[in-house]
Image (cartoon, rainbow, N blue to C red):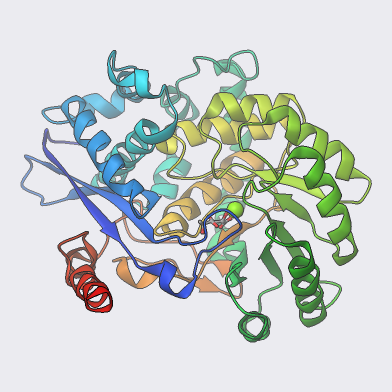
Length: 446
Ligand SMILES: C[C@H](O)[C@@H](O)[C@@H](O)[C@H](O)C(=O)O
Ligand SMILES: [Mg+2]
């Protein structure tokens, strides 16, 4: 049973020097240090359970998010957990409507990433207190209660509370069977680990060959910086993976609208399933234009990792501007806002294929996509969840991949807890790893 008053909220700046080996590199983020603003909430109960939450960031951005989390903590500390979850919509509204802080959002950018980290910690704690993994907490919840976690303000023209309730009620049909199926076979995944933009051809060939042997059948390739490089790399990968496996492309917002159409048309011969983030993540009509232009080539548009809230997703759906919707567990306002987006996607019949990777994103989003399959979409058609093979060793309950699918997590909580030793080592700038990198740098300079 949910219990206790929140006694403290602390936040740490944890960074991993992934840029040194070009892990995570793409056409716009050439030196990403995968990082997390990592939140811990403690209660006054004697059970010792804590809530862990995070949001994914890159290097320097983390310190700004940490400040925003500190600023939000006044809404959390001193609050009764039962009171929060029994009016979760109200609590969400309170966090996102702070009369002063909303000016630096609202519901977007740094302040929204901070909101997500805080709420992720609350969901983790709630699931732990119930003794269930988060996906199971959601699956077992009554549709009325699920709906009560969602703030419908700004989306009722696309999805009303009654419609959301209907979708969830209908989703009950066959739920047990789908849950068992997931426990047996896991949720299908694709890999992005083989073809970061900064990898050499040799390295990506090695990684692709190895991934194929491990049973991967779906591969994402970074593109967008140089057309002749893209043609060479896509050709190489298509040759390795063969004609029947899936290839997806990701340009990370590099192009203008017309440029995107022309560039992707030149890559069409390699039969990509989608082009991800072809242009600015805010350009809904631009994405719609690209979608229309590429439809006859059989290439869809995917986006969402930097789609900052449910209003944006609503418009993407209304404008038919995406064919694959990529929710993100840490960019949207936690489970609450992700629920609303999954339900809108169901109504508009668009498959949800979550963004993952980074640090912790796979750990978190696996819970959401399991819920989506079991209770909302009920379908695996055109659906898969991203997987990236980095930094899982720092989590207490890391994701498990079996036969290119996410094995269903069993431990109570949202899989957000990091190993204390990792947090200590990688905390910026005082952790041992950063101290050593810093003195190495000083040595080079001196
Ligand atoms: C900077 C990051 O690694 C991004 O390149 C990454 O999130 C990527 O867009 C993805 O789809 O996984
Ligand atoms: Mg991407």
